[in-house]
Length: 111
Image (cartoon, rainbow, N blue to C red; front, side):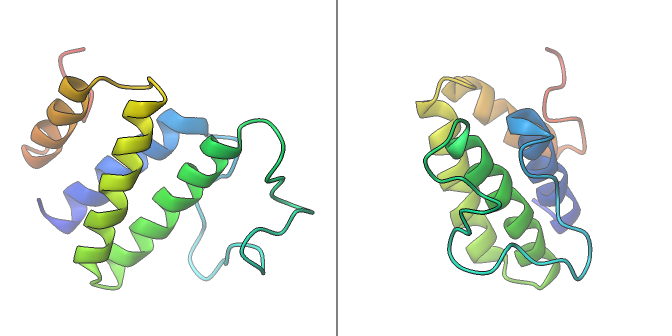
């Protein structure tokens, strides 16, 4: 999978998770200070898993852009595992996403 394909897949997962719970970071923007700043990221509130996965997608995109591909792939595996566990996608869906992204198709192609 190329860097562009990886970014497209991570962007798809971000948008599928929760487009408004934690929007993608723009260039130079940083996640709030502290592991979880409760003033802007409620670790006890609703959608905490979605917020964290959306943040992980944004961070993973940055890893790809910095050339930290192995780390981005590890995080992608975690993201996909949680999406499967939470019932957002089946294992077959996740497999198809990777195949489609690798062929420069939308991850949800043929759905």
